[in-house]
Structures are given as structure tokens and as C-alpha cells.
Image (cartoon, rainbow, N blue to C red; front, side, top):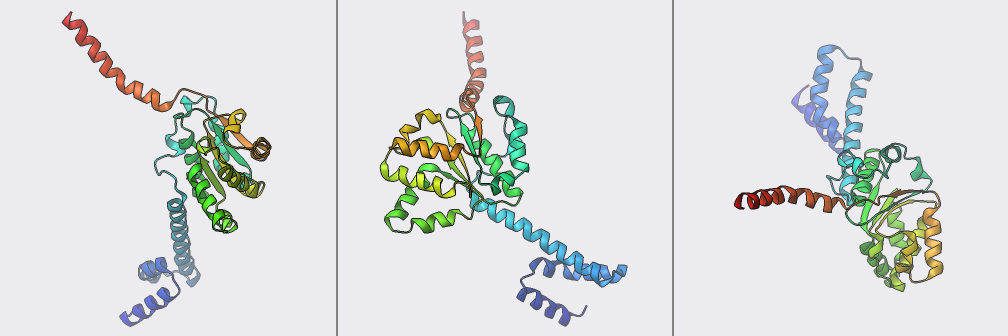
Length: 265
């Protein structure tokens, strides 16, 4: 292929926004000439590479926008430490994403430090790998953002932006302030996504204590009713993982101190 033709081809592929084909075209064309490929095989090879790399870039873009912690994956979640959670059930949620099309919810309950955020983050990463869009955000931060949007008369636009995401993860709903303005926008968010777009929520407190989150009792009942309908509930009532890890780290030092004390007697 002449240098002039190479230059022209490069300009054409740049105009068409086909960077992968531009990068691989010369090598694949040379291979095609050597091996006598028919024209359709060359075209298939070029476009398959372009499609595959676009998909990789798209997934990476969605992962970067998700707010998920990169190292909190299902592959490194310790299911054995939380026997009340079925690994098979979680993997089914990761693999069969039709529940997102129904706007179903995932609710995770348990005390601080048991791995709720890790587990839902791992599920989020798996869903992104499956081509879905996920947003992970602290519930209190999102509520404040929506409250500001309501004050500025653009709440509808902010809620519409969240519709881009197949799954909205609200982490630590228990830390939302028991304030009429905050809890009303939280309820509006839940009602807006009900049976349309999925929500995942982590909470340190059971439903019976959600009166501490929502000011109005009727609003509490209505919010819980919408979340429970079409939901998967994961109970993680075990000892704090962080506490167990701290105790494990302290154990060698305690044994060493005990041995030193015995030797000094």
C-alpha cells in the first residue's frame, strides 16, 4: 500500500471516527494480501476489532462514572464470613440482569462493617461488565444534592439524569438526617423510580427503625412498601468484618506480649 494511499486512508478513518481500524488497517491489509483473504473476511476482521474495542472503552467509561470502589469485587468478597447471604443468589443477580428491566430493588441490612458496601459494589461491577449502567453514591450526599435541585426548581431534571442508570445504589440510608426537606426528596426519588428503574439500598437499621429516617409515619410506610415490592433482601447480621480484622491483626501482638510476660516471671 503506497504512502499516499496510507495517508488518505488514515484521514478517511479519522473522519469516520474509527480509531481501532485506523491502527490495525495496514497490518490486517498486509496479512490479507499475504494469505489471499476474500474482501468480506478483511472487512469482518476490521469491524470486529473496532466493535470489540468500542465495547471495552464503553464499559471502562461506565465504570469510571459509577463511583464504585475498583477493588470491591464479588471475586474478593468473603461469602463464608456472611453465611446468611446466599452466594448463588447474589451470582444470579449478577448474571441474570432481567430484574433491572422490571425495576426491582436490592436491600442490604446489617450493622456497620459487615461488608454491605463491598457486596453491593461487587454486584455493581458485575452489572457494568454485563453492559448495564450503575451509580454508587452515599445516600445523604445525593439527598442534599436533590434538595438543592428542588430549591433551584430543577428537581425534575436531576431525577431525569438519574434515569440514565439501570441501578442506583444508595449507600447508608440510615445516615440521612431526620429532616422534612431531605426525607421528602428521598421519598420522591424512591417513588419516581418505583417499578421503572432499580434501586439498591444499604442500611444499618431494619425497617422497624426507619421512622428515624422519614419524619412522617405515612411516608415511612409508603417508602418501605415501594422498596419491598419486587425486592431481594439480603440480611447480613454478623460480627463486623472490620472488628474481626482488627482483632486478627492484634492477636500476634497479644501473643508476643503474653510470651514476654511469662518469660519475665
